[in-house]
Amino acid sequence: MQKEGKIVITNARRINMMRCIIGLIICAIVISLTVVALVLNIINFFNEDSPEAGLGTLRMYTTFSNIIAALAAAICIPFQIDGLRKNKYRLPRWIVEVMYVGSTSVMVTFAVALGVIGPGSSFSYAMLGHSNLFLHTLNPIFVFMLFTIAISDSHIKFSHSFFALIPTFIYSLLYFILAFVAGVWRDHYHLSDFMPWPVAFIAIISAAYVLALLLMFLHNLTNKHVTNGIERYYKESDDYKFDKVGQAIAHLAEVEAKFYSEGDDIYIPVDTIKLLAERYKAEKLPLDIQYDIYLEHYLKSIKK
Image 1 (cartoon, rainbow, N blue to C red):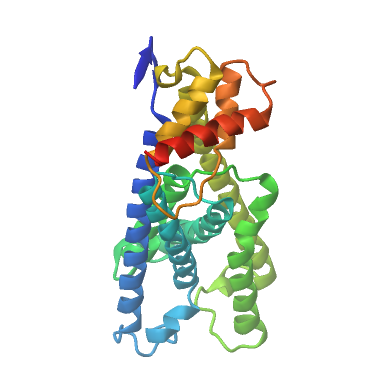
Image 2: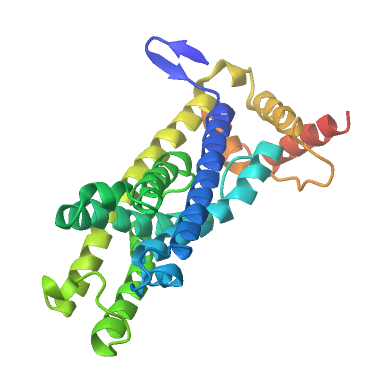
């Protein structure tokens, strides 16, 4: 860590490592809470007359959204473990997008429980009672932290915000068909008490989209902060202060080679080398020469 007045430049690898560890812990918590809540709901024999008791819990959006979030968290874990093993902590973009979908879904649950179910019945039961503590409160909070703080590897494009609505759209469509058109389900959310179902459908999707945009904004804000921190590290820290760009690239290769394990694929950190080239104003240096320098020193280091 280097101080320049009030500016602190933090090791980029340390930033990513901490995010990876925090993300792994939260993912494990989300999966565990979801499993516990599902077990509690499935073995719940206190409301045997309710169609939503026992396996009927799968009819609830709360259950549906938390399962999606838990599955998204489960997909993250192998990459996080691999990142810790290889000291490469960046999640693939598609995984971040999947987590975005899961986060939006579970935040819809949180918003409805907090703003609709709680005031309409018992706030303490809606947020803290039985499995609601896990599915309405704890999981949404942890998933929110996971997506907006720990899993900020990629910038979410505005055009991708619509994908976050897919689970809510599918569930809402099924709910209105089964409850109001086919009459197979009862209206367990009592939507007909407040408004006609077509209006309710539009209202739910609109509210979900507002939440999706909010999550996207907060996620991208963290992503920008982390990205700027990483750029500052490679462009300004004393760790990469050399006379020539070739020396800086060689040092980068030596650092990366420390985490090589037999059988690992060798990749060239193109973005990082680009940052070093910009630092030394060597953008015109042919890319093949930059990459050759990196590979030469990387291979030498792993053979030692």
